[in-house]
Image (cartoon, rainbow, N blue to C red; front, side, top):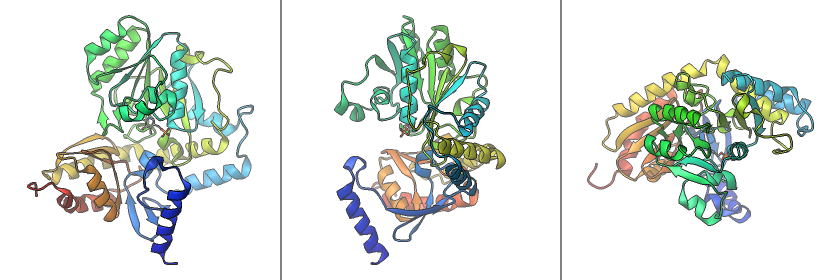
Length: 404
Ligand SMILES: *Cc1c(COP(=O)(O)O)cnc(C)c1O
């Protein structure tokens, strides 16, 4: 069978064996190494999406491979009736990186949505009935996280969702103050950069207001750093770009395991420590030794390779180069570090992503006017330059009539 026949055959079998929730996959991928992946036709792609901000170290990084395989040889799974050294070490490491005060603690889950479910339960345990989230938020697809997610198309088919959640307009401090005033709000959930909404960073002043006002009203500030955490923005956590700002609870997942599934909730300080009592939450797989070893390898490599500085430098350079193209379709470049959204002047992002794929670049369109880039943190300027060099022609190919 030729490579192409093999690809068609696999795509066909996918359609018959898997539920259609994701639509038709764009390609069947066969292998990855560094910042590249190859499909089953043998075609190479520069991976500028990294499995949606997940493959922090790229594909098949030796440090991650070795950590996972060594741990699998030693001890793979124990359940939470037992502890393991990697789990404890990773929790300690996360608390250290988050600069978490005494009384802080970690709960491990397996995904972003699960981390947010746990955070939701922590919020409920305050005993207060209302929860605030932001318009255009994305917190995941399970029923609790979905209740915190504003997109009507995701929510409507599954109502009734968990109750008590209200959505606030992003950036409106007065609306926030009014909503918090009665003193019955358990928590405010926010993403420092709204990734799925098109890589839209909260204004630093609004984030400061969120912190100040929630503290004033005894409301928890819960930051969803599932997409922005673990070095993605050039800080360990995006909120650390703002001096002195610390949430009460933070959720993590995507980049933490570098491709191995793991999520985490960090609760900051004594006042959040005992909200979840023994027996009130749990998970079979969460914090298993292999996932924890993967997390430790990702964090260790970010430290050893100086990737935080690298991400800031490379992200700034990429932003400059993209803006330097001065293309009429490019309106702006949003985001931070290596989580960037190219804001377009026309709703052609899906066509642009498809054209990029044809040309050997994996990117994505979280909405019709945004192209999202979230490459492996290890990507080099030279590798990124191949994309900026190709972009003008791709933009020309999708430009609406009259804009060429
Ligand atoms: C991806 C994402 C989630 C959901 O994570 P899953 O691992 O897909 O469940 C939650 N919040 C944010 C901000 C995300 O980007």
